[in-house]
Structures are given as structure tokens and as C-alpha cells.
Amino acid sequence: MPGGGRMESIPREVPVKLNRRIPPVWVTGLSNGTLGFVTGVVSFVLPQLLAGEGVPEAKIAAITALAMSPNFWAVIFGPVLDVRFSRRWYATGLAGLAAVSSAVAVLSLHHLVVLELAMLVSAASGILASSALGGWLANVVPQQDKNVLSKWMNIAVVSGSGVVAAVGAELVRHLPVAVAAAALGAIVFSPAVIFLWIPAPGPDRRLASESFGQFNREVLALLRKRQVLVVLLLFLSPCSSFVLPNLLGGLGADFHAFGRVVSLAGGVGAFVPGILGCVVFPVIARRLPLRFFYLANGVAGSLFTLSLIALPHAPWTFALALFGEFLFQAVAFSIQVGIVFEAIGPENPLAATTFAFLTSATNVPVTLVMLADGHAYSAAGIRGTLATDALIGITTCLLAGLLLARFDRVMRGPAAGSARLTEALPEENGSAG
Image 1 (cartoon, rainbow, N blue to C red):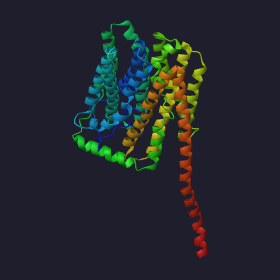
Image 2: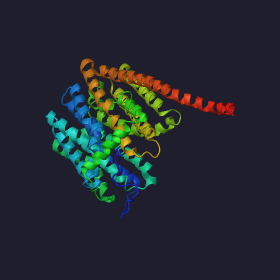
Image 3: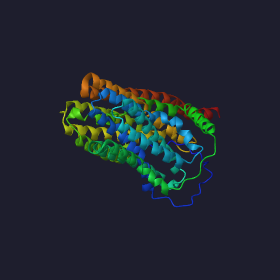
Image 4: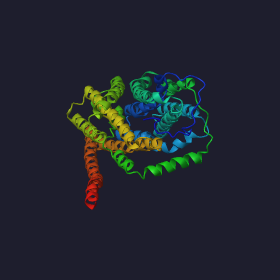
């Protein structure tokens, strides 16, 4: 989903003239790896290190939830990336800020206030860097290559998160902390090196007030559309949020999994299920309506979470939990994008804003459920966290399903009445004649 929601400041009817060749699409897409590396550091490596320092799980969950919150509010700063400087400038500068703040977070394990702020800045910078990159690449990559580009940008996020989950904590354990922090920062920034080979159009000369004004008008227009409101309400409910992958990094000790086992399980658990989820999604989506698929995936994933309570607290259970939770999370992400495309429809002049607005909404329940899971851990341990997470998912999926079914019946009512009226008109005309 990174970069998909950027508004294009260059008018569609004015093609961008490029003076040099674009790198292969897979290389260009992997330049989005900074977001994957930041995600791995914030959601897995730092919680694991904090747990090793004896920080309570409820506190770790609260810190991680705050750090992940830019996933839904960073979109309001998106219009800034379209003005004043080139998007390559923004993408490079923000990738550098993400790298520096990630290193500061690692250096601040004993200073939680500084660590919280550094994690927040790192996550927000990674998201905005990806947004700037998406808006930049939308203007330089040929139309026929954009679906392939989207695939590789998402692979960069999945694989980047897995790589950092596997090696991040190991670097801190086996190297001086300053060296490890510098190494993690270098890893976070490394995809930006690819920017040197990607041609970049010049900056947009609009004022920031013009860009924000356009964005605000488009969001207000979206809120008048019934289809968008239905999807927005679905995404704001925590029926398929799957936040446990963001918490399990700090819960290895509850499964008697320590050190290298946690890192290896986190790396493989993020990478393999992420790719598998992308492969499974289109196969099932051909057979099920996407909204039903979304709710069914939420219920199935929650039942999987509930089943973990009955398993022994062993390292293999920890690995299984990571694999399953990452798999259901990856499928949920894919379905969300599919539902957004359905809501956008063909030739929608607000396509970019719709994408940004709806995908950011999917992250609101993530923060709320993470806080609930953290409090459940304080009250009842790992079993409390698993039970709370599963019951939230099952309950909200069932409620959302009932509401959507009722909405569909209401919408079919006027459509059916209109169809009956249309069928009756020829008869009336005939009798009149």
C-alpha cells in the first residue's frame, strides 16, 4: 500500500519528459525497502530489546502502538510532499531521518521518553518517504509497468521487515551498541542509494496552501459517497486488524524462546507468510466477494489465535504463532487494497485521494487493539492477550457482517422497486394505446 495514495501534482495531460533510462522495475520497486526496514525495527526489533531490558509488556505495547500511529495520521502531511522541492529530495531526506531516528531509538533503550519519540519519528519518516517515492515513481514509470511496480514495492516492505526482524536484535547483542545502532541506521537508509539511478522531475511550484486546499476538497467529496462511507466504517472496525505480529517480538520469553530463536522466527515468520499471503489472495478472491473474504479471514485468523491458548508454551508454538499471524495479516492487507480498488471504481477523478484516505483508515483499529492487548497481558498474561485479541476479532467481524447484510438489503429494496416499475411501464403504455 505504500505510495498508492499520493496526489499527482503534475497534470495528467502533461507527460513527464525523462532524459535517462529508468532502472528495471524490480530494482525501482525495491527502493521502497526503507519502509520495510523501519517497520521491522519499530514493530519487532525494539519490542524484543525492550522485553530483554525488563520493560513490562503493557508499556511495550503502548510504546509500539504510539510508534505505529503515523500509519493513519501521516496522510494529513501528504500534500507537503507535492510542493516546493522535488519528491526525490523529500524521499531521500525522510529516509535519512528514518535512519537517524532508528539509530537513536536503539541507543535509548534506557531512556524510554527519548526512545518513544525516536520510534515515532522513525515510523512517520518511513511512511512519508514511501509516499514521496510513490508519487515520484507514478510520474516516471510507464503505465504498463505500474502493476509490477506495485508488487515489487510491497515485496520490498515484506522482505525488508523480515530481514531486520532476523538480524536487528542479533546486531545489538553481538556488537557494541553504538556500532549496532549505526549498522541498523545504514540498513534503513540503504534502499535510498537506488534513487541515484532513477530520473526525477523537477519540483512543483505550487504553494503548500494550494496543495492542502485541493486535498481537503477531495476528502470532503469522498465523504459524500455512500460506497466510500461503507468501506470506511468496515476498515475502522477492528474485525481484521491482526496486531499480534507487532507484539510477539516482545513475548518470546512467554514461549521459552530467546535470542536467536526469536530473531530467526521473526525473520522467517514475516518473509515467508507475507509472500504466501500475496500468492493466496488472488486465488481465493476469484471465488468469494471481497467483503465476505475480509470478514471470513478475520474470523479464521481469530480462531487460529484462540487455538494458540491450548498449545504448550514452547519455542515451536512461538514460531507457529508468528507464521500464522503474519499470514492472516498479509491476506488482510491484500483484501483491503482490493476493497479500496472496488470503492474507487473506473475513471474516478479522486482515485489517489480515495486510496490514501481509505488505506490510512485501516490502521486506526491497529493502535486501539494493540493497547487493549497490552492491558490484557498485564491482567492475565499471554493467554489474556490471545483471548482478548481473538474475541475482539470474532465479535467485530460478526457485527460488521450483520450491518453489511442489512445495508445490502436496504440498498436492494429501492433497486428492486425501480426494476418492478420499469417492467410495469410497457404494460401500462400498451393498455393505454
